[in-house]
Length: 128
Image (cartoon, rainbow, N blue to C red; front, top):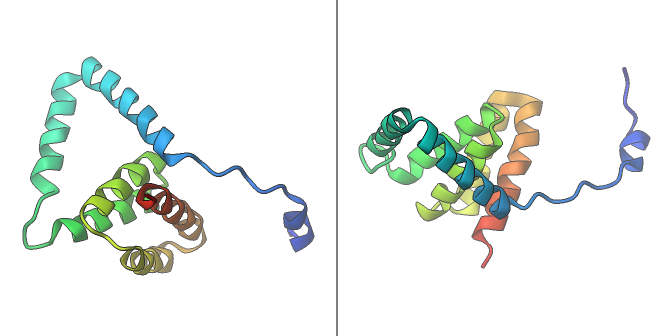
């Protein structure tokens, strides 16, 4: 199947995702999951706490790695969470853009599509 640029030009632009609202919804779902499976989620939280802290790698670097792995897994909830954490850890848009370049290099076309999602989420969460 060959897609022409005319077909793409005729498409209506998609509505921008509200990542802040998506984060609120994820928080509500996470609360329900913690109530339904408290031991599992407590263990998962402990693992995250043990890994996502300063060490030989900075927290900033670890959050960029986590974010790129979320991108490669095509996990929008992972992207949403780790974009927020990356901003808190001090990741700049320029650093993010370089990391996205590596993700696209390693993941090709699908990663380039999700790289746009990551950048859009970063812009929304970092806006004042």
